[in-house]
Image 1 (cartoon, rainbow, N blue to C red):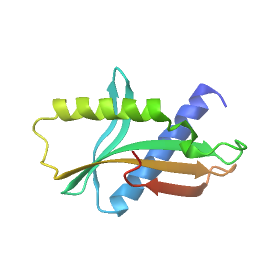
Image 2 (cartoon, rainbow, N blue to C red):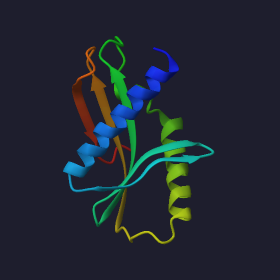
Image 3 (cartoon, rainbow, N blue to C red):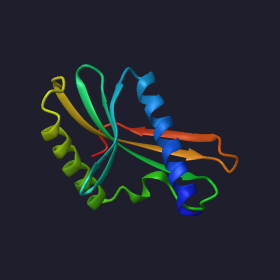
Image 4 (cartoon, one colour):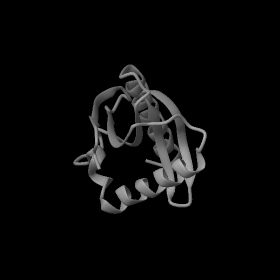
Length: 124
């Protein structure tokens, strides 16, 4: 899969994940927040809980590849650092009584249709 196709697939997965969070009562307050450590995919808020969400997207055609395979300790550390920076730069944001780190895995079939969505609340 070339870089453009991979980027398109990732953006589609992020959109599916954002729709899922909206259905669960969250507002998406930030998408693709860029830092020196990488990009924070989604930040969502439901009035009480602020969620930093890492989205992993794959195709079923990628044999043996699962969405959360690349959610290793180094990546989790980077997401925490990105969240810390986001919090420091968003001083005017609404108060959240809880912070949570979620992961959403999105799998598309070979036709490009959604095959599976897995949401791990408090994934790390």
